[in-house]
Length: 121
Image (cartoon, rainbow, N blue to C red; front, side, top):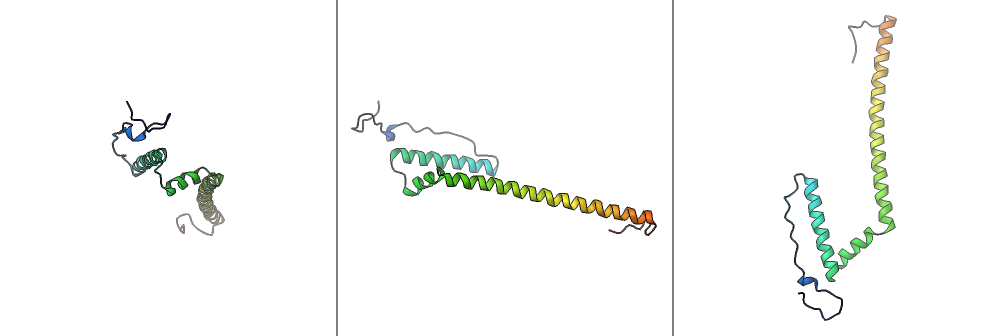
């Protein structure tokens, strides 16, 4: 039986049983961070339900719900994809340069300008 707050239809959140989840700490730094983030979100949710959340907590979650935040997330994803593409292009360019150098060496050997044993690096 829960205590009444004096307002019909309202429940007293302080009287609800606290659910404690016992989980082993994450094995990696990333999984541990995710656990801590999850716990922080749970705390923020309880504070918001009780009406005790600070203005910073409320503002944080309001910002997450904005269109601008969604666009910024999309921008970051695209920037990451661009960086990956640039990295792949640089690696490809390096391979092409090596192939050209090998081809030039082979041409010199074919023309008799250089012997196969005297390769230059």
